[in-house]
Length: 428
Image (cartoon, rainbow, N blue to C red):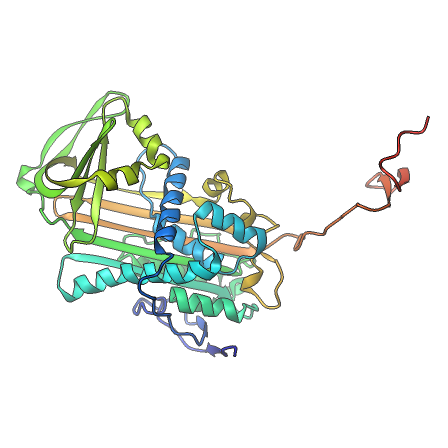
């Protein structure tokens, strides 16, 4: 029996289901939500290892497409936002997303992702209850065109497996209000670390759906660096030059592994559930070691790491990154979702392939100092109608057919003919 769809005409706080709180910016926001409570994960979920393996492979693939220089991004946030799009993908579009993003078949994927997401969120809840200096908050939300025929089953999937209600706007008249509202949501969910993820002009009358994920992490080291021990020192760049930066010095109980051309160490955070992995290639071998990320380097380290006392020297650092995911993902072969051939027919009713992803943006920031680490990321995906091509028209000329060569402007027939047997040889 299909669930009813409930339309709540009310001002709402700007947070996903299960994530209360947040500023209310627009007084015209409505919520369209399926009557489907969030699913309780089965324990254990057999598909979880395969999901994590696929997502980690995608993470290293995406890393390989990034520009040079400092880089911070959240593979988890990106995968989660695209997972909500995957819930409405069909046919070859779904298959391509599954292949490139490392997703599972739909009947396993959303249940497994729900289990992983709730597991991660529970780490933050447990730490808060135990008053550990550890925070991990994850929020999902979706923003759709008011009156658009979103499919009930799709809304149920968003609610059951992603805890996300659909907030609706009239993008034709409220595009700027919608942008301000989504940015305010991101600002709130990242505790002010990412204030604007949707740029001016991105949303307009063509916008039909925006999928959003935010992740916020803050934790102290188990063994904090003594700020008094931090001192300026040289940091050698890839070209051999050196710059002077504040270098932290400290001793930690963690795990370590020495591999071919590198040394790696896991630095533990309070709470005992998350570490920072630091991989230091030997001089002159950075590109070589970095290139092995896609060949199982992280698995090699995880398998070989042993408990160790670590003497750590590393710089304080703080920076952010902004990724235009469309170009990066197309480089990896994820092209159909961004094209007029995209099939997101599972999102709407009646089912028709009329939406494509127009923009996919990601912002992330990180601060590492003597006390610990603070990091946040937001991913947004905008879907718009396709062009005039809504569904491929199959022109299957595997039977006798006519043909003409026509001058476009005047319609003059330059050649006209037919094919009744293409196996026949040319007439003599």
